[in-house]
Structure formats: structure tokens, C-alpha cells
Image 1 (cartoon, rainbow, N blue to C red):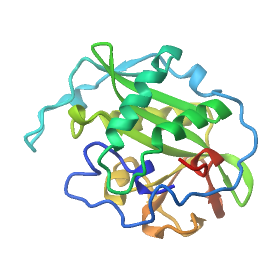
Image 2: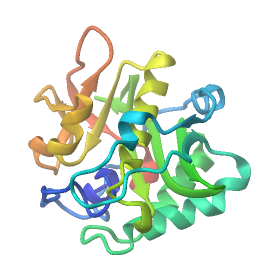
Image 3: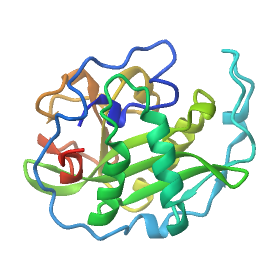
Image 4: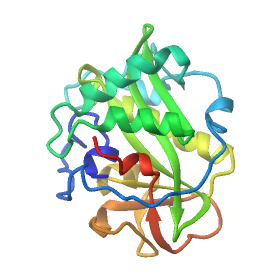
Length: 235
């Protein structure tokens, strides 16, 4: 699992920030996280929400603001093909992607590990997607989840769609009792959501400054983090 997997693909990372120089997607974690309640969170996520006024405010970087018609909602069965297409398009030109991200989402779904799967929709078209799946710490499940892949179609990048998806994903995890979330990505971007590097949690093979954690509960676990095997499978 490399930075391309979890870095916000809202136009090649974050405006004004470079993605971390870490191994590519082909180098992945291979430890199992154990069984999960398939889609337990995704089944009960709140109804679709329209873009907030704050997210629609006029931008200062020349990009158009996110449309008021963009909604974030749970995936539906009929969305599967459109999600795969958006994920593929979002990562198509990413320098650290091997193109396997759509298959990662498919494998998570097949394993029942796609615990949160949200889409951003505009005028009945899916323009973004975010996934969350369980992670283990020192081989134990402990109510923590990994954010990613996060994907936004090229035509909608840098317009706040990625932020709306992350906000809703984190709100969903919190509402259903998650204890925390990790992401491998740009600290400047994910710091906006409260993610911070913490030496207590480690992802071997990746720079500590780009492996970030956000604790929802009272304490931070300590140990080696492993993602679902879906990330480790070859392309």
C-alpha cells in the first residue's frame, strides 16, 4: 500500500504540497485483521447530505467551488461499476499508483471489509468515492479503521469534493463507535481533519511523518498497524 492509495486524489494531492516519496502501491502490508461485520457501518450511515455552504464558498485559487448539487451518500449496489470507473480515473496519472486501486475496493467489498463506502454524486453522476476498512494493531482488532482509497474524478478535483467525502467518512465512523482512524498521506492536507503523526502507531516501510492517526476515544493504541489483505494482493 503506497501513498497513492490513501493520498487525497483531489488533483494529485494537495494544492501547494507534494505527495510523500514512499514506496508504490505494489509494496503492501500483508497481515490479516480478522473477521468484520460486513458493511455494518455502511448499512446504517446517515442519508445523503448536500454540500454545505462553507464548502461551496467562493474559492481563491481560480477553481470553481463545489456545486450545491453535490451530495455524499452510501454506495448502492448499482453504483459498483461507476465507483470503479471513478477510482480508476482518479489514479490514472498518479506517479505512485500501479492502477490496482479499483481492484482493492472490489476486494474489500468482496471480503466484507468495505465498512464505509461513500460516493459523491452530482446530477445523478458519481464524481467521487471514499473507502474505510478495519486495521489491526499488533495483530489485534481494536476499533480502528484505515481511510482510503479516496478518489475524485479529474473534472471535479480541487473543488472540495475530497474534503466532503473525508468529513462524512469520519463522522460515520465516530457515530458508530470507532475508536480512531489512520491514513497514509500528506500531513498538511490531513492535518485539517485532525490527523497527526504519532510514534505509538507504526506502518513498517513508510515514513513516520506520512502515517497519520486521528483518535476518537480516550487513548491511542500502540503497535504495528496492518491493513486488510485486500491491499496486499497483487494487482
